[in-house]
Image (cartoon, rainbow, N blue to C red):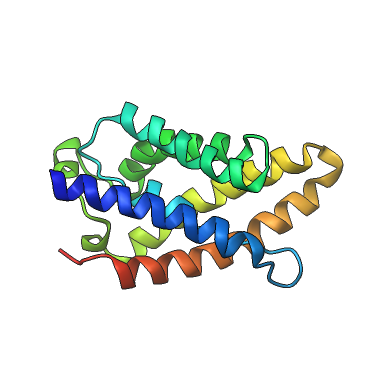
Length: 168
């Protein structure tokens, strides 16, 4: 239990620092900014209670907002994907609640894990860009930024998960 808490705490801090110090200053092609801090929400243990996930996800998004001066947009998007994570996982994996006690993303087939990460990333980024532009006149810009930034984020996130997590 203590090891799990330590792993999640280190992952939280490392992803916030990576996002704030490196990725927020990396604008690929002038406007693409990968947002890999959402990997923390994806990898948070299922067996923990949902309220701690929501509170910690809010703090994660708020930390990014604080350093990015984005006014709560990241907190809103992060708490939303934390809220829909378990129902989405049930849809993607098509299992009963009992199977989630021993859940590990690396133990799931690559296709299902990829689909899960992709859906969460697209939802997160769509919320981010919708709140950033907040206009129907910018709908094509919102969609294009969502798609392009999500592709970059998914690639970096999956590589990070493969490299930095244990397969059980």
